Picture 1 (tube, helix red, strand yellow):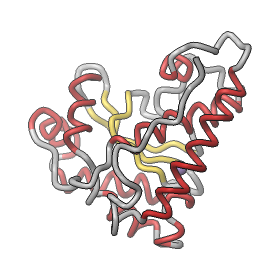
Picture 2: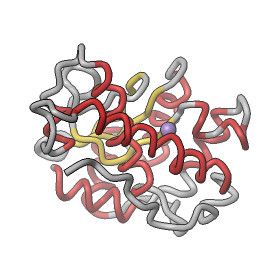
Picture 3: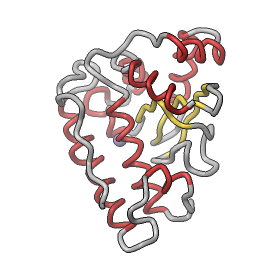
Picture 4: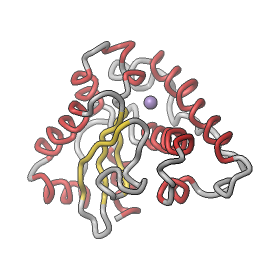
Length: 202
Ligand code: MN
């Protein structure tokens, strides 16, 4: 069974004005679709075919650049669409809020840490909020389409929130102003979904 491009859980224009409709159309319909297609081509006829994407990435031979880049791209974007939404923004509550406060002292301090991870990633990559076994959370970033579940690349936990900082994610609307895009992202984070992932993965 080949991997399929997941549908967006909302309309292309649902995240306006924070993320513009045209960017969403190209990002999902071209970039994510491209990673999905190339991932399928890379695993076809190999022992990776038919395995779960988390299993493939967490046991990956990092020299397998086709699967590293396209499997990472498939997984990362599949998470990205889910952790945003038209009714997003605000702050988490409950266990996740407590874990963020334990790690960073306050939600605002977490925001600064996350924005710094996103802003200081040179070139293309991702910023992450990960959860470790036991519930501790950690912010980190990875280059290109690498992901923290891959061997030896990031904080080593399971990502529950991810922000794409490739220029294709923001350039049409924000040009070189990555920090503005990062701040806008906080307006669309679906904390209910992130909290659900926290509860499932901790
Ligand atoms: Mn992207």
